Amino acid sequence: MSDLVSDVVVVGAGMAGASVAAELASRVSVVLVEAEYSPAVHSTGRSAAAFLPSYGGAVVRALTAASRSLYDARSVEYGTELLRSRPLIWVATDPESLRALAHAAKADRELVQLTSAETVAWCPALRADRIIEGALDSAAMDIDVAGLHGTYLGEFKRRNGNLLLDAPVRHVERTGREWRVTAGTQVISCGQVVNAAGAWADEVAKLAGVPTLGLQPKVRSAFVSPTAFSGEISDWPMIFDILERWYFKPEATLILGSPADETDTAPGDARPDELAVARALESINDITTLGLRSVRRAWAGLRSFVADRAPVVGSWAGHEGFHFVAGQGGYGIQMAPALAAIAADAVLEGELSARTAAYGATLDALGPGRLGRA
Ligand SMILES: Cc1cc2nc3c(=O)[nH]c(=O)nc-3n(C[C@H](O)[C@H](O)[C@H](O)COP(=O)(O)OP(=O)(O)OC[C@H]3O[C@@H](n4cnc5c(N)ncnc54)[C@H](O)[C@@H]3O)c2cc1C
Image 1 (cartoon, helix red, strand yellow):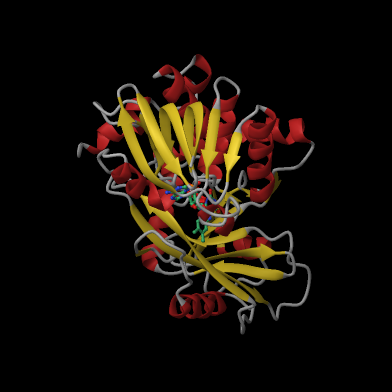
Image 2 (image 1 turned 120 degrees about the vertical axis):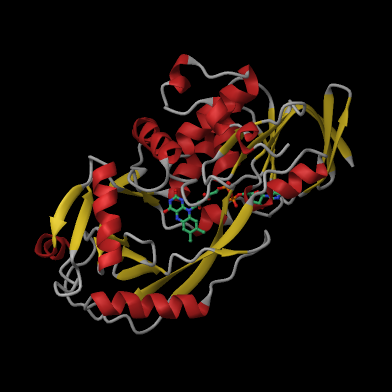
């Protein structure tokens, strides 16, 4: 065992940990510790890479909207296009989903209602007789997830951040005003710990003797499949069932689809639910002429939620110095830039700056205290 000293230790080098660590490293010394041999092998490496402003609850939408200009600024700074336009169409295929679509369109004035024919004009593989209506979110995008994660890790290293891979945190101890974090073969003394361990965030909290969040990891499966549809598909929008029973979008010449499953599980290396994938193929084939017959590759990852499905940034009262950045659910990539900037202010200042206060979420709305379970 060897000893390191830093101001902050960030646990987990997925999108949450990498982005927060980069933000923090511009102001203090940071060690970022990751259990795996390479970062982003869990949820971050398994996403559908979509930026969907009309997806999620109010806090998620505010943070996604605030992230948009941060993505643009990073794209310019790093000379790489981190977002690329891919409109989203929510669709209704039965009376129940038609009611949900009407409700969504009423609640979100940015959505543009489409007739069946207009929806099919956007995606000619949809069957006009199966689509009742659509709602267009023209601000939706594809995300270069590896690119975004890479810009944060690169920034972190340039700011003299220390990334330790193959360094699972197994012991976290409070001694006076200091924390001692045992990660792999290193013991790190630090003033503050940031728990960005994704589905494992409650496990890491337990190691530190800190109350848990009641975080529930849920499996979501995804697949890519060749299509029998002839013709160019690459500029089609993403098509999402408004009741979240399936979605699909083009992935180069293939179709990326998902049964949008949400099965409770324990933290771990998630495996795709083959039955759910088969059901999604059936549902998508039922409303399209895509003719999806085989699965080229299927995978799954964990989307972890607390009770209100909004992210958690902050510490429990009485446990200051141990901060959560967790519970990003199915939105952890799209809202990462704003969430990371807010988290850095929460950790270092205990309050939002003028810049992060404008992102539309308060520390009261994000903190674990709102969950009322300490
Ligand atoms: C199929 C699927 C599709 C999705 N699609 C989208 C999408 O289109 N858009 C979007 O915004 N979001 C999407 N998401 C959600 C998004 O992927 C997650 O919200 C995001 O990746 C969470 O990032 P994270 O860093 O918190 O978690 P992770 O990427 O899982 O990172 C947590 C890290 O912590 C490490 N760790 C855990 N315990 C320890 C320990 N004790 N010591 C050290 N390290 C530890 C893990 O090894 C892991 O690398 C999707 C998710 C799935 C599964």
